[in-house]
Each structure stands twice: as C-alpha cells, then as structure tokens.
Image 1 (cartoon, rainbow, N blue to C red):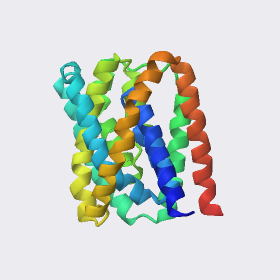
Image 2: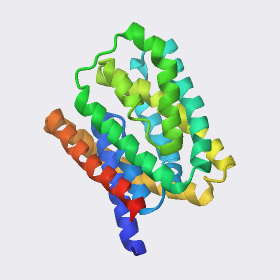
Image 3: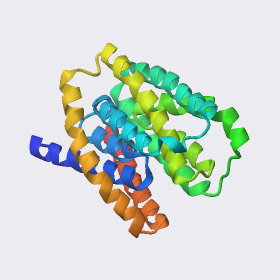
Image 4: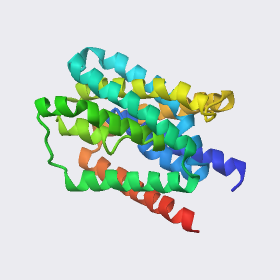
Length: 247
C-alpha cells in the first residue's frame, strides 16, 4: 500500500469518526481506531487520537457543561476512567502487536453484540451511581489498551436513558480525564512523541470538519437506520481485523 492510499484511508477513517461523533456526541474512536489499526498499527491508532479526543471532548463539554449529571457521579465515572486508562496504557505498550489488533477486533464485536442483544436494557440512576467507578475503570482500561471504551462506557451511559445534553456533557468529562492521563503516560512509555502529536493535530481537520455532517444526518435520518449502518460498517471492520493476523 503506497503512502497516498494510506493517507486517503486514514482521512476516511477520521472523517467517519467525526460523522459518528457529530451524530451521537461520542464514539469517534469506535470507527477511527479499528480502521487506523488496519492501515498502521494499534499503538499508533491509539496515540494519534489522544489529543484530538481531548480537544473535541472539551469542546463538547463546554457546549453542554450546565447539563452534567451530579458531581459525585461524574467524578466517580471520570476518575475510574482515568485510573483505568493508566493501567491500559501499560498494556498497550507491552502487549504483542497482533494480540492488540485481535483485542480491538474482539472489543468491536462485543460492542456490536451488546447493541443488538440489549437494546432495552435500563439502569436506574441509584444503581448506576454505585457502578460508576467500576464501569469507568473498566472502560478506561479498554480505552488505554485498545482506544475503545465504548463497549463499557457508552453502553453504561446509554443504559441510564439520559437526555442527549446530559449524556454528552458527562461522557465528555470521562473522555477528557482519560486523555489527560494518556498524554503523559504514553509519552513516558515512548508511544507519544512530537511527530505523533503533529499527526494528531492534522487528524483534527477531518474530525472537526465532518462532525457537522454527523449532526446533520442525526437530524434527517432515523436513529435506527443510522445505528444499523454504523453497526454494519463495524462488523466489516472487525472481520477484517480478526482475519488480518492470520494471513
């Protein structure tokens, strides 16, 4: 694969991530990380998105900051995510690359399965408050190790049946805290340097550029249709990921 094709596919991956984030308020890595992992590798895919995740989530949090869930829930969830991201960063640094790639594929499949099987799952707020710390830690560990916390974090938050502004404000704090921990952790582990930071800055262009497209689609396409399209795309990506190490 030549450089021009790699760059075009990377831009497509980031644009797709921007569309998903613009439509749902979260989840850019769900599409971008698996696609970038196929083009480059998991470590690069996770590292290049750390700064864009920090900036885009801070932007969304600022827009909806007055709609966050109570501070106790928010900080238990986000604090657990930060600790989990630290643990996951060490897994990312030291686990074999093929194992990491397979792990990404499995995490994507778990997310698809959960979305298909437990569409009606509801979690009362009182129980969610008790689970906020452990759920945050597990989601953070997945984020640190594979760049994908969605099977835990987004599923957990969706189960609370929150209004969209509260969902976006609260989960944005979760992602901000994880990214803030990942930056020094990955730098210390040798996975984040000036070159990758510059690549991350460039990655912001398609991410931010296509977020309004996602917001437009969310207003004009039925949510169920949009969800099915995303899940179908993720299924194809997961299949490719799981087959690639065997070839």
